[in-house]
Length: 315
Image 1: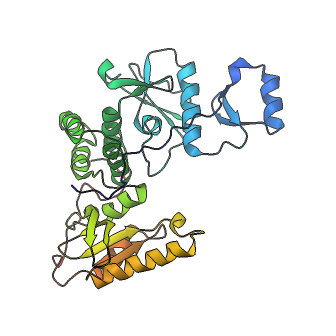
Image 2: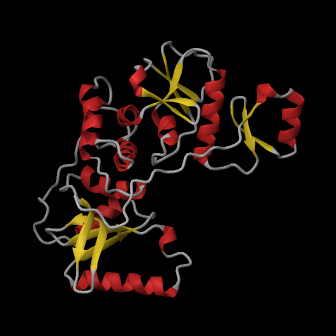
């Protein structure tokens, strides 16, 4: 599928915060550093320098702490592994996911989610010195455990990072148990053309509502130039673009003019464009897009996909 020039398979950088383990220091030293505002507690027995507030950095710090104090063989998994692989997430969880061979203790740290069994060695890799499920198994686990929107964000990001679709489909096809049917559907719907979690969310609105799946990175030829829309339906000449807050913040005047000319070019070429922002919900995206569709584009009552609605829960 054609991709916009400059489109890359970049992953998010993996944070590497300075991690302070409480067992390396006398308790009075830890208390003094915390009281002085020098250290902030990130998790059980783990502290980071004050000012470290990035949720993904805190995930890494907590993972380092759990790895250090877990004696039995274990592997970090699910969204914890997704952060370590640099994948996008819809929401960063304040928990650590751990795969191991035994059942987790009921008195253990409640911020640690235990999963069984241990994965085979071929599905384990090392990221910044931590044992992590490999990219394919990480996505499989997320698709089965997360709500559908969150799962699609992870799958889109993984394909964009270079995970072969065939490898993902092989794992989800073999999967059984809660969430496996939805995992197979989401793997089939995942698209490496989504460049952000919000673009995945915008596409999810249409998939969930039962609309024809939009294409990503749509080529729009106009008399002025060739442009690329985030997603859309070329047959209907409808484009949908996600406008992040940083797109126009402090933009120089010539950039604003370029954007105006781009919008004019789309209209002159007969395209209807819907601009989505972070303020939009799944419902408003549908409502605003429906208003620009050509007559008869959709059936009178599109049927929402049962495995994508509701947004939470397992099937």
